[in-house]
Image (cartoon, rainbow, N blue to C red; front, side, top):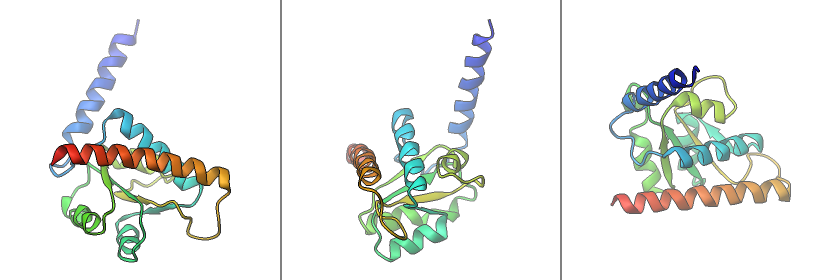
Length: 155
């Protein structure tokens, strides 16, 4: 009965998300890749392998930490993160844009909207269990391979 209005509302939400994207948000993750990326970010947050925010991400990249950079596509002003893709390319770090900073924050287990995160496979302190490490590594490899495939088709 109310399913028509619900689908219309969800379609309107999706359209609003895409309208608020900044023009440099390329490569943008599709629905499937977005889900996988958020799952990876969630798993990395649980195992303390996540750097949140522009300052922390830039500091980690400059210290030669490798990982996957996930950037929100609806940041305003755009100048806050325009240097990140260039920095990632110089250091051979794959990066992907996701539609909203709120979704990125939810996946990263924070309440505050997050501009970007860096997913690493090594925790900040200590060691991971082998089972957790294997799951994180397999998710990481899967997402990175899809991102590399998308970026290679762009150029």
